[in-house]
Image (tube, rainbow, N blue to C red; front, side, top):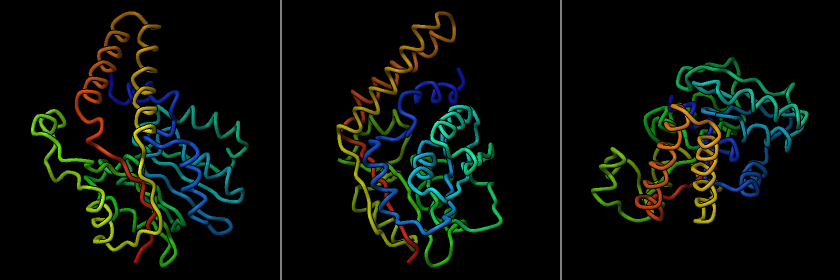
Amino acid sequence: MDRDLISHLAHADHPIAAPISEDNLERLLVRAQLPARARILDLGCGEAGWLNRALSLYPDATADGVDISDSGFARAEEEARRRGVSDRLRLHAVPAAGFAADEPYDLVLCVGATHAFGGLAPTLDAVRDHLRPSSGLALVGEGFWERPPSPALLARFGAEPDEYADLSGTAGRAESAGYATVHAHTSTMEEWDEYEWSWTGTLTRWALDHPGADGESALAAAREHRELWLDGYRGVLGFVTLLLRGA
């Protein structure tokens, strides 16, 4: 099965698509203290879980969601209608790195999608191009090493040791890119476990309900992901969501 479709199916019960609880997501959005008629952009929005919540919290804001795949857009639009914010949400099926807008944004998100730009530093450079000068905020979610990964785990990830830093180093990388950290949330083990059990369990349930080649492919993907998590990066890979302002 297509990787984007597998991800879409696996996130059906966890549309936030990151190891963050809904309560902590809303705390981050409230902490941003956006101005009246704020403009919000999510680069790699998936099912627009963050944007729909932001539009509910800021009733005069507007938002653009960008993703290379539109597989999650139907769910995003359904949720927007349920919340009564669909007239303020626009979705764009284009690569995040190629999106261009006529006006700057008060908040730009890129949570769990820094790979679209090649890592944290190039993501922050790209985000800056969309921010309102002097006052714009970035909300960027990135992995970090809770403890040094083993060579075997790096090989399974296809990663280099410096692909992520530790938590202090991750905050330092953001500040070296010209940002000041005004708040952050470090995901807990409970948030990680809820996210991963949801990802693997939701995909497994879909696979069992759809016998045949697609179901077998989805079940294999769920098992592979669960093994990599439980026997590999659980307790090794962390996740932090940084609320940043241009320094």
